[in-house]
Amino acid sequence: MSISLKHISKSYGDVNAIKDISFEVKEGELFGLIGPDGAGKTTLFRILTTLLFADEGDASVAGLDVVKDYKAIRNSVGYMPGKFSLYQDLTVEENLEFFATIFGTTIEENYDLIEDIYVQIEPFKNRRAGKLSGGMKQKLALCCALIHKPKVLFLDEPTTGVDPVSRKEFWEMLKRLQKKGITILVSTPYMDEAALCDRIALIQDGEILEIDTPKSIVNHYPKELYNVKATNMYQLINSLKKYEHQYSVFPFGEFVHYADKRTNFNTDELKTYLESEMLSEITIETTNPTIEDVFMELAR
Image 1 (tube, one colour):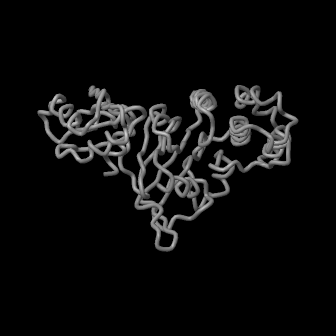
Image 2 (cartoon, rainbow, N blue to C red):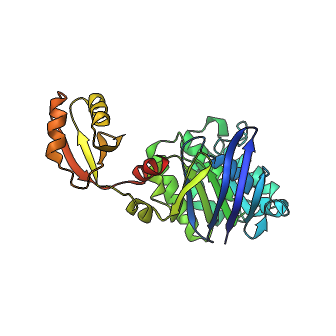
Image 3 (tube, rainbow, N blue to C red):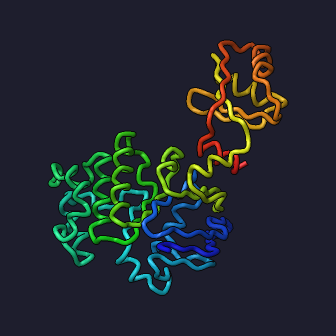
């Protein structure tokens, strides 16, 4: 296994950030840690990258113990923290040369690994990092994390605050890196990105809710799900929440995702109820659950 955690726990005073977490990531796998802000993702990343000690449990990365072998781990992993942490007053090229030098290598030696990414920022190689756009900062940070040819890559919410086009490009880059044999552990609050991983762990309040492939997790949703729409969405949500047979009600884009407690649910009955609530232009259609629906169900 490339990454292994056994009963890892971490507290900050009275706050239990991580509670008895165990899972493994296979070599060459793209594994996603999916959860909202405050779920414990960053604490877990800091433990695995030897920046923080766990209170309990054992962990290893690339076959190395995170406590005993911390120096070796730092030379064999790449880490891209959630906050842009490169030197803002250095240029793109200077940042890259600096990180290559720290790891005793050169840009030329591992250029094949970063070439696909670097060609996109090379036109700005003389621009200071602090003056780059969000997407360009992200690509530079990834280049710096890869310049020493790591065995494992840790990416902590790499696409937060980045435009949709750059997000898409970034995940395409990750897929190409995976084909080169690099194990990737990525965290994200975006449920749509979860579907792009080989396997995912859903995390909430420091606890793992479920670990499986995205497809298998979606298949575990226990109810028939419906897209419901009406002219007044705010009123629609409130009316559905008041409905005596409602099992779950969540806003989802232009629709409300609705599940009913009953197995013999009749959509006409729900439509009649909503009309009695003075709603109009009502549509009720079956829909496929998403990872976000499963997460909300597990978090209940």
